[in-house]
Image (cartoon, rainbow, N blue to C red; front, side):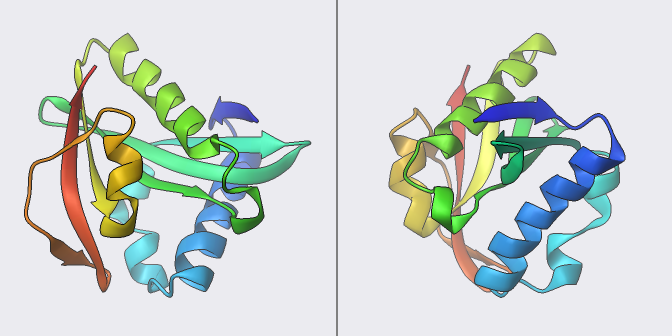
Amino acid sequence: MDIFEVKNSRQKDDALQVRRIVFIDEQNVPEELEIDEHDNEALHFVGYENEEPVAAARLRFVDDYGKLERICVKKPFRGKAYGKQMIAFMEQTITKQGVQKSKLNAQTHAENFYAGIGYQTVSDEFMDAGIPHVTMIKSL
């Protein structure tokens, strides 16, 4: 998979398309919660396989953390470590900004995935868009 920080409108449209498929269509997250006010300020990322957009994510800098958000991979492309690749790319972007910690709100079904790449749970379970989540952090 080839990962890019979004630099043009086509790449941003591709990233948003992946997010719509995964979060809005597949997980039934309301569009007004998925596409929010933070999209204007965030860095966006898109991953392509043979020029097809298959993964997306966004990154914001909040307090002393790089906050990983909206990490998703289209269903036919899961199980290929694309999520891990996207996160590694985002973590590199965070450290290039001189930030040494990352944070994310993980859907609880993905908590073990994030734990396996070094994230530690630091919150109780909470609901976001009707889906149970936990907050996780990692030192980079």
